[in-house]
Amino acid sequence: MSELTRLSATEARQLLDSKAISSVELTEAHLERIAEIDQQVHGYLHVMTDVAHSQARHADSIIENGEATSLTGIPIALKDILCTVDAPTTAASKILDGYVSPYDATVVRKLREAGAVFLGKANTDEFAMGSSTENSAFGPTHNPWDLDRVPGGSSGGSAATVSAHEAMVSLGSDTGGSIRQPAGFCGVVGMKPTYGRVSRFGLLAFASSLDQIGPFSRTVSDAALLLNSIAGHDPYDSTSIDIDVPDFTATLDYDLKGKRIGIAREYTADGMETGVSTAFDDSVRTLRDLGANLVEVSLPHTEYGLATYYITSPAEASANLARYDGIKYGNRKEGATLQETYLRTRGEGFGPEVKRRIMLGTYALSSGYYDAYYVKAQKVRTLIKRDFDMAFEHVDAIVAPTSPTVAFPIGSRTEDPYQMYLADVFTIPANMAGIPGISIPGGFSDGLPVGLQFLGKAFDEATVLSIAHAYEQATDWHTREPTGIA
Amino acid sequence: MSLSVNDVEYVASLARLGLSDDEKETLREQLSSILSHIEVLNRLDTSAISPTAQVIEVDNVMRDDTVAPSLDHDEVMRIAPRSDKGFIAVPTVLGGSDEGGSA
Picture 1 (cartoon, rainbow over the protein chains, first blue to last red):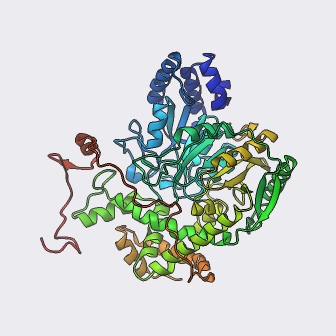
Picture 2 (cartoon, chains in turn orange, blue; picture 1 turned 90 degrees about the vertical axis):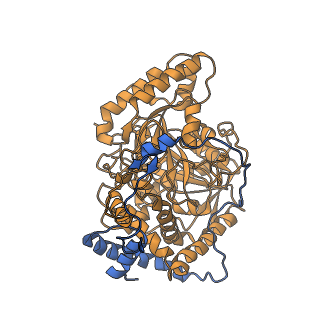
Picture 3 (cartoon, rainbow over the protein chains, first blue to last red; picture 1 turned 60 degrees about the vertical axis):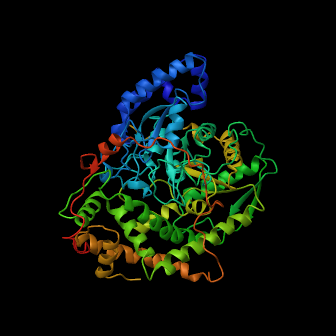
């Protein structure tokens, strides 16, 4: 592997600016790495070779003119649920196979304007629905630490490509843990910003009250760098909040002495692996050694998070996915009548998990069940949010495991949907409450990465990143390279 | 909560999802199982709790009504599955369908 693919974006920035390397060289090294190993990983659905070459040349001219900003010339992977004008956007679904959007997502536009280099579109569970990337209509992604295991999901391709050094950084989306859980499984950094921090315009909508776009990277400072570039109000997304965006890289050096970090006693689950508990206990000890004041907090409604999520998100999804009807864009299976066309297009275009969620959501919203399921879940959501509001009166952040297990074998949970849903039990509550969360490398269990999660107050990503950075600087988990690639 | 195949067919018709008989039976079992897990919510008394639909306190987001270019018409036709003379073409809407009414 080329040394260029080992660089962090922060390191590459200095080398690009000092002309020690060019973006063309950096990009070429990543494209070679992709050509060499992506058949094993299958992190990409579409590699944007020509686009990347031309963007890299353009980036080098920007750098030459002394006009570079933080991401100019940096090679990035994009989850294939973010619209791009110069590559297909499929959401890993047959219904959008071959679709090329007439506009860029706002985050894509921002990266493009910053002179970033797009390596390709990363694999995902179909429409971001899943926890393993096995629901991709175009085949699963493999975990770079053990190719027989899942990378997590739904942003499994975004996590695996960064882990396998096939991308320097990437973007994913997180509705119930879809950034943090695969980051944990693949041993990289993944952050879900506060709901409203990043524009979702051009993100194919799954559950609109929960979806948020965020960065993947191999270091916390790279996550801060990427968040700086994508955050901010967007008139095209009325749920993006008009609030100041601080420089998240400026506050990373942080003294944990006296900082209050909460441990929720409810964040244990049936089936939590010993290796995960052990790694978590070690991480808590590290935080304590760094001077943090670990405080027990209570989030009593944690156990209801999963059930609340599996009403709320399918209900919203069933409405959002009504747009895929084969009329204005996407693939159409034409029948004799419009009605038949709808049934065939959607029946043949969607995969099993997407159908399951549309059915569950439609049921929960249907006449006679709306109050019992949908309204009930919304009320419990209030209780989950209140738990966090109360906990954050006492602590600066909360630390928790990212998932109850390490990456599981491909095929081991596909038979029982509910077993798969349990993979998100520790990540869902943050989406329900809209708060920011990050997963960073937090140890290993039998050679597989264990994620460590920090949750913070709404719009206080700075504290979350700073605590994560302090832990990262005191450990070396993030420097290890995946061992599963031949 | 146990669903019947009729329930599954009714919900599928609301969602405009064409399902095979095998899919209907699989979904009947799986949805029944998922719904039984969701019944855990009934343990909570929420009679005095107001619902949360979303977590940020914004409403009525307004902007100036300024004229700006929208998507190019040819681009929009390019992505349409079928178009005719600058319009998106669809099969028969009225008549022939079980709920299409009379043409």
